[in-house]
Length: 203
Image (cartoon, rainbow, N blue to C red):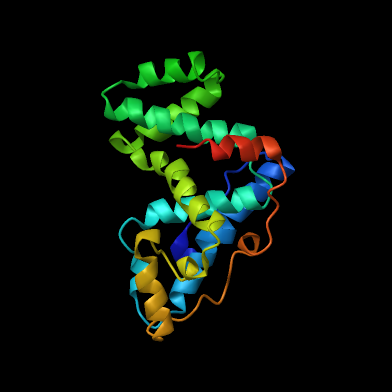
């Protein structure tokens, strides 16, 4: 997604199942685009710049939207988990070939999928953002299941850590409530018991 242009770019020739396309739209548009646009409507510039740790919250919200829309799959959960393991190997000093072979042997990925995931983790000399997705999802899901509102996290690139401050700033009208909201946070489809069971086991 290109925030400055409010544009989601898809690689030419890419193919999607209906479920994966819906998951992509809920992730990129339902959260990332929504928070980008809401940020531009705020009287302060801070929501556009982003709070500390906002990536953890942003990706957690985005994966939650995939889940609550009923479009997250076992394959997607496996991919997110393997990203964590690949990043862990990277920071522990394993090289490209070692990670690639691990993903094929232990991760049971084919060569193309293993190469793509390894390249993703090693790009730019090491890209560790991918370990945040599941951790952020677990934190946001816990907040959601406790019945706490998520709306003010949609004001911009915000962080769950600072939600009490955000709530106060909205109450005192330094910030505006989000104009656009993620639909799945109000009406969800947590209907797959297998997916729910696996997610409940996240540590």
